[in-house]
Image 1 (cartoon, rainbow, N blue to C red):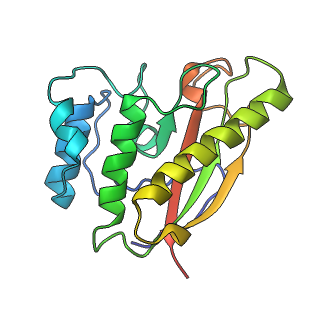
Image 2: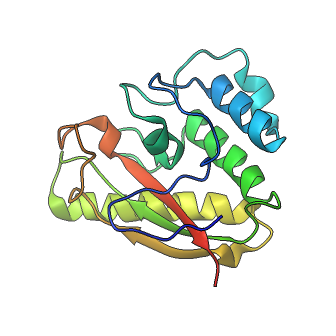
Length: 175
C-alpha cells in the first residue's frame, strides 16, 4: 500500500473495501472487513444484534471508515468507536498493513470556545492513540497525534455538526 499523509485528505485503511453511499451499520462494517481481510474482531459477534449505525447522517464511506466519532463534549470512546478501533487493530496487523505508520488528527465541532475545542480535540486524538497502541504489536507505528480543534469542519456539514467531533486516522508506508 503506497499512501502519503495529505493535509485535509483522510486516507482510508479500508481502502480495498467496496463503497456505497449508504451509512454502514456496525455489522456491515464487520462483514466488509471480514470479506476483504479475513479477520473478525470479537466485538463483531456482539454487533450482529445491533442495527445502530456507526454515525448519524450520510457521510461517505471514506470519511466514516477513516475517523472515530465522539459524543458532544466528550473524549470517551463509545461502543461503536471501540468496535471500529478493535477491527482497525486487526486490519493493521494483517500482512498488507503491517508496514503502515499512522497519523491521528483530532477535531471538534464549533460549540464552546476555540481554546476548549482545541483541547478536547487533542484529548480525543490521545484516547484513540492509546486505544490503538494497546492493541498493536508495534506501538511506535503511531507517528503523530495532532489536534486541529474546530478549524477544519467536514465539507458539507455545518461547523456545529456532530460529525465534526472526530479523530481522523491517516496511514502511509513507514519509512
